[in-house]
Length: 179
Image (cartoon, rainbow, N blue to C red; front, side, top):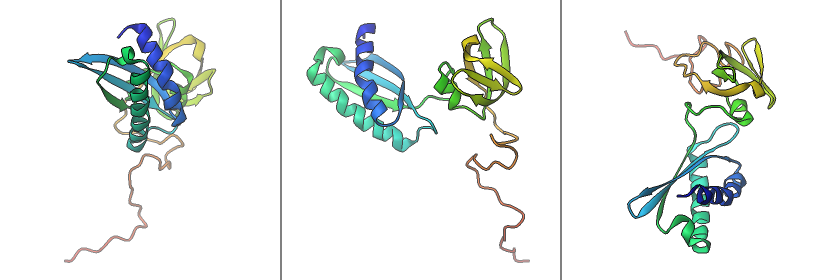
């Protein structure tokens, strides 16, 4: 697919994705035999769930069918739609990417080639704070979220319970085992 066709498709699909409360983070169209595969990445503040992906898929599928009728040369007929959300390995390049990763350990690659790593505590659109270091986004090329298998603290400290795991406290009544 030509770059101009991809840009046109993106222009047509962006309002559909935004109407669902998401941002279009990526769009790719590749040939697959007689069909094309349309791959989209969508995201939103608070994260994207499987239900969100299904909702966006339905809306975009309808829009693609309409586009194929109005502009048949754009997709060229049959297509397969794949909708997903960006993985943790997606580079942080836009202010909203940084905002959506507050609380995570991030490495910032600066324009001068140096790197700063720290817990992302502030992302206000103009600057980000990694640990004690405050960086202007205009000096940052990209950020990379670091995978943590065991985070010592949540975004709000050691008592934060937003990691989605269930914990048993000392006060919990557990059934006694038979002797």
